[in-house]
Length: 387
Image 1 (cartoon, rainbow, N blue to C red):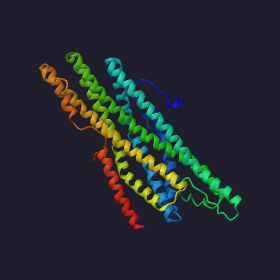
Image 2: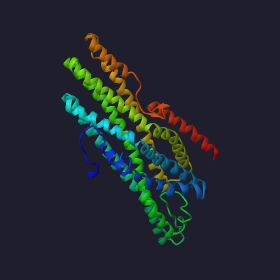
Image 3: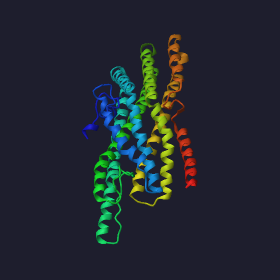
Image 4: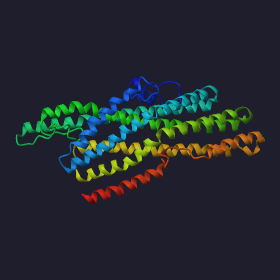
């Protein structure tokens, strides 16, 4: 796992940066064409077969539609990040300068908090990548194992019906994938790497948004800790200017994150309702089989992704607002007028709302997550009553 090894300096999303480079989401013109084969694979291997070649029955139509919406959320989300690659590069530069300044010129307690939280974020990111890797193996290989099990059953019992389990429910350009072993194997050769690409794309998109949001939250925590340290040592005259700059840098990073993720989260908000409701509808009309388990893997991934965005968005807003509380607790009223004026500047800036939004319409927080769940259930009931 050398690709996931920890690097310096602390305070930067190194794993996300390396993963984004594989997709060409960088500021280097010679690398940006890497996104082209990814999007072409999505269009020709997923969109076209699912949209133009039809389905044999209602159950397969539901699961095929759910898969299409889920993969659209992943690939189009990645493409939106690609379109914001310059802002991502700007955020990385801001994050690097912020981290280097903290490591070079901050008290030991602040540096220790940065390195400790960086280690924790890196560890969680590694665990997430490993878990998704195992889930991707199951998603890609379980249909083959199910088909092999059915094949062995037909050998033992000549009257048994051969059933081919597909990795994605679609009629692939006229191939008889549900009745022909040759066509099924050809389909598997194409769809196995496609399934892994889908998992990889969704992982990079989710990890990138979660990481940059988490690091912004960490920056506001460092501002609070620096303010407490200045208050304890009563070194306002010497260090307050640097704290003000540190706070402004954190606000700049948060503004970039909001701008980078805004359209991606709006898409997530809209498609999540369709993904959940269509998957719930399938769970109610289907029996327990490999397709059920594979779709449940996608359901868990999408639920975890949406919950993470809402939870981390709320935490970012909370830690940003906590800077104002830290100023109130600093005994500002006992300081000189010049110090009070500088503290007032931090206070005014900290009172402006900070967070990640869905298209600048709604802040992503736990209240919004509850609204999504309620909306999904209502939409699911409507769909269920129509069948």
